[in-house]
Image (cartoon, rainbow, N blue to C red; front, top):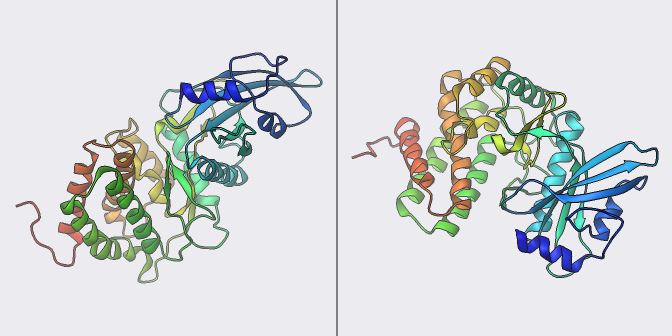
Length: 344
């Protein structure tokens, strides 16, 4: 992303009164609260899909303020950051102390390349793994008090998991919504990594046989699933602990309204550090498994496959595809309507 920062330096109007190595486009300056004086802007942190920085400012009375800035020149940058701003705004509206307050998103005045920005409050966070007890309490609170504005599963615009979109069209059925979501991620993976007939054939059986049985059961015999607001990409890189207060913050969201158990499917994946059972155990102390409870682990396995396929699409050639294949075999063996050995 160094070339993107250099493009900002070349294309942005100079502001010699602002110190630091991160050039601020006029669109960013105008998006910030106008009762502040910008002191400096510097590169901060790292991202695979964007350029990030920290803006230091102060009020007219000298009270300091700081903001986190993200800029991207990806072709999908406008939709990507619009989705992030909407997701972070929905989370902030639900629990203001859970996320840094989102401030603005938009397009820079810089014409070439087209560049988009997102601004939120800066929080001084550390990169250690979050405390399992504190994280579980906070996520259970979010899942308990959030209310879907339509009463359905989904979100009012597409959100992006990393640099790739996910289908979030409103749907009154969780089983139907998840099938559409997983299908979309599967075809992203196929488009990027190439066809794999065995995986695609098993995926069709998962969509046709496993999801109606495993997830459809949640919505049968008088049972129902509440659409809960989830972060959508809750791995350790998107969770931080405030070094000053000890509070947990989540950020870089790709939210939608979902079955609450969907949130923690990714805590099962091998490519993330938060796979220790203590995270799932603490969450379940605060949010009991949906009925049938004895199928919770299989639902968790299925939900994790969305994360695995999205990772595979972001990291072409990884072995995560093979893990999805094995998960699909296991689930079909157990829940497929035409059960037969898939391992011979």
